[in-house]
Length: 135
Image (cartoon, rainbow, N blue to C red; front, side):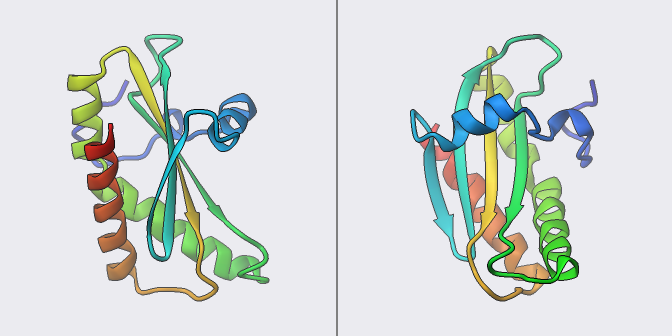
């Protein structure tokens, strides 16, 4: 497994299990925070295997807000990059405070317009800090 201190986003840290995604959005135990234009829905689960990373994430951008795939993909890239650059504190905190749990986080874009990368980065920093405080 890749060291959490490196600024990478390997495939293992992506949330892709339908079961976990349903559990995350079913509102049973999950919490949500918003730093406009990004909303974070998160849930802690027991780590099933030692190979699971401490934090798993996914990104969602609605087709209702962005009709063109080019625009949706740009916003998704911005969100993933902002998370990749700022995830280290959250990953370190999860490994120290909750060693047997995995944090599942979904970042949902809730605005109908694109934003500057610096603004997306700032909103992501705020969300990750607030998630760490809530856990």
